[in-house]
Length: 209
Ligand SMILES: C[S@@+](CC[C@H](N)C(=O)[O-])C[C@H]1O[C@@H](n2cnc3c(N)ncnc32)[C@H](O)[C@@H]1O
Image (cartoon, rainbow, N blue to C red; front, side, top):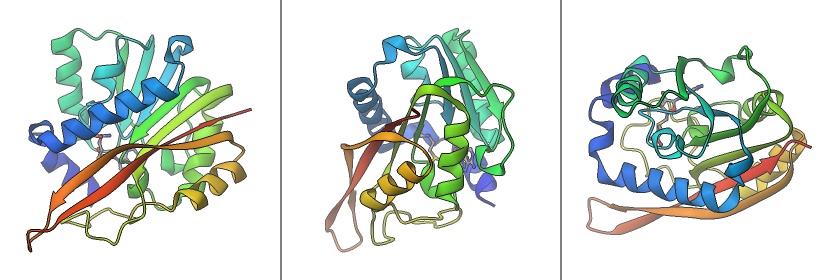
């Protein structure tokens, strides 16, 4: 059901300035928090149209970009061709399925605004852990806990953001260490009554020991 939603949204996904601003802010936060210069094999989960991957492709040697929406992946594949990014592999894959990718020794895994679409956060973080080399790093950006007013359409939304303390404990229980949070961005939305509401977006980084 949520694949259909994202398939439909894919064609105009990049047209919304607030999405591009959010992705750009997450890229800045990742560059600030993670020593990318040392990263080789990289995985993006829930890459969408590649707003992050296209920005990070010049500082990362190899990127596998996965998503469960073929519509999103088709847009990214076209961008990869147009930009001549021969270090980006685009793949339809669900890391929350329990299946393993054929590569499971990534140095770095990143993701933006995907975690809240995945029901079992603990199983998903454990899958990320399994796909990392010892010493590998995750960087996950998502909404801080909100009151359910962020999405106009709740299709496929499994979490109204996250309590970062609980998420940090969960990441620790999945075997991650050095769990850190920073605020990467604040999405501002005007509500029907004219109020402006801010939704903070965190970046969680953590390391597989
Ligand atoms: C809100 S969009 C964010 C897309 C992109 N990261 C961005 O910031 O523009 C969430 C994306 O996660 C994808 N997604 C949802 N569940 C997924 C899963 N289990 N595995 C991989 N991708 C998933 C959706 O298809 C969608 O492209």
